[in-house]
Image (cartoon, rainbow, N blue to C red; front, side, top):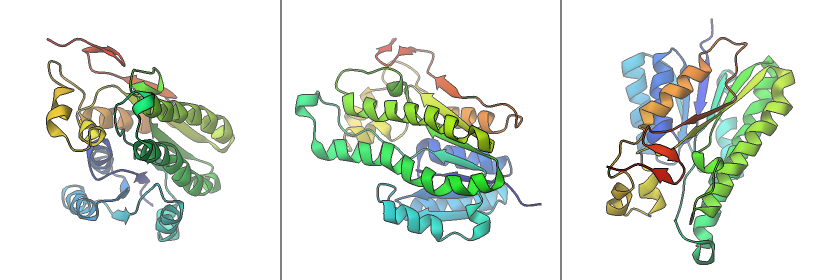
Length: 253
């Protein structure tokens, strides 16, 4: 019997990496993607050694439609027949009011968080339709539920993920394909380091005074959602640290 396959974008760190490890432990064969080839190679070795699962690595930039298409098409037919698509690749870049925003930051967020998600979904979903089953998990954010000052474009991209998740669910329900959106609050990963363009000191201050979520926390929610009985779909999950009441209300001791 063929093992189920999970395809995870943005798997070189954080939530994507943690999800790959958890699903491998659950018996899934894994396709991991990202732009950092050495990290993909290291994760592949770890999964194979610790869990004995088969792993395919695809190194490409999800912002580029042709790279995304070519990477997916490089897979054999068996590997294209994925059961779970985890649309995890995403980022925030910059934290400024709209009048001071950087065009390059905006393009990076829009191209990754919206267009990249659309590219890989468009390519992968026809394979799910052939089987009349599948599960898409889109990683949204509390920023897709509420807008906060200086984060307008990032929030807009995550609001788009929220809308796309709802639309996908409507389009795909007749094919037996489930769509789940997982929306984390503050998670301590590379997120803030990337947002602040490598300023580690500024990034670290984001989490001062409270306990944020970890990548493993969010991965455990994803694992729960995708391992429920087939007739159950968790449509929308908002997962927050205990100390965070909203996108911009956090209790810090």
